[in-house]
Length: 143
Image 1: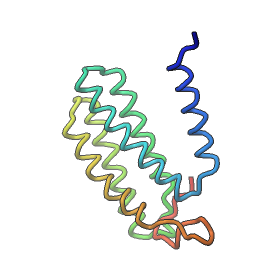
Image 2 (image 1 turned 90 degrees about the vertical axis):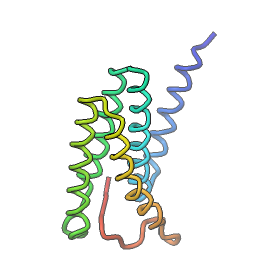
Image 3 (image 1 turned 60 degrees about the horizontal axis):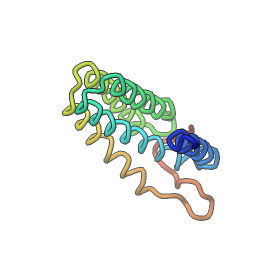
Image 4 (image 1 turned 90 degrees about the horizontal axis):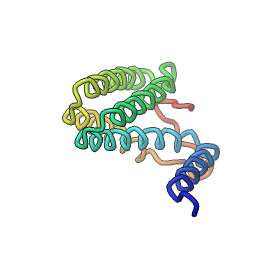
């Protein structure tokens, strides 16, 4: 009998790679933000279950994802908005490291509450239907 869990993990990895390969830059940013929020939520569960190894991995992944968002900022095109996002992303990364150190769910909640409105604003921008790319935006997140 095949290992169903292994098969599902492999399917998920292939599906994720396929989604990334065909995603627009706009959709990639959405996916990164979704991934960060998902990992924060999973980390909270890990803390509650006292699975500290998994908690560290989930928080580390969230830190890396937010780092990717920071690297994609274009301060030249985005001006003050990009500078402010860079400062926010830096703060979120530092808070995640603190949450990991202290296994602090409240800090994870704070990070999620700060990231969620950014994601919602990005979602609201939408994609330009004629080109499949986002309309002129204050930030350029090429990933």
